[in-house]
Image 1: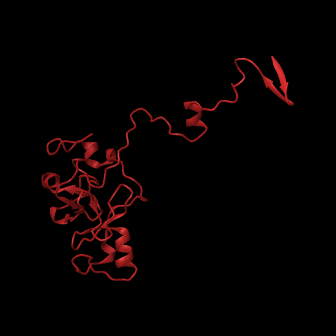
Image 2: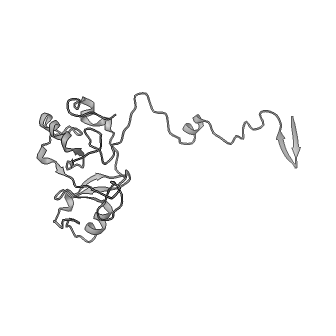
Image 3: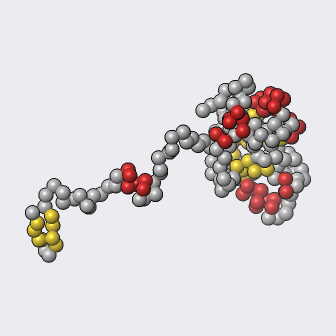
Length: 198
């Protein structure tokens, strides 16, 4: 039944809150409010953490990288390149001499960080490497102490470097590559070399 209270019409009964609920359903959340859409069958997306080998998908011990900024663990990439003579991620030809040994720095807690700013690296950090030395820095350190003053000398070793050859190891604003799209994943070429961590 209905009644008026101070000029406001109220509907009494079990359905009185049906149109004025304090929650939304899952379908409303996904269809009307921009919530996460259910993944399609077979769809799988995985982002590789910056401190992991792109071949084993496990944390690296002896990191090396390509000019494109793809990081591998030396013990995994050597046997792969010796057999296939190509980059396992892009499928393009590569030689072991093309790999650059990286020098990451850790703090007292064992966390990778920039040796200049001391900011801990996370998935949101912009990380670069100097190919001439292999030293790894935050982009902020490079931008403020190298790029802006045009002082192109390694911040640790003081060796000169070419700013055009800076290697980007991680850029949070760049398009993220799906691990499942790596060339070797599609061809299942790692079974004889490493244990894939999926």
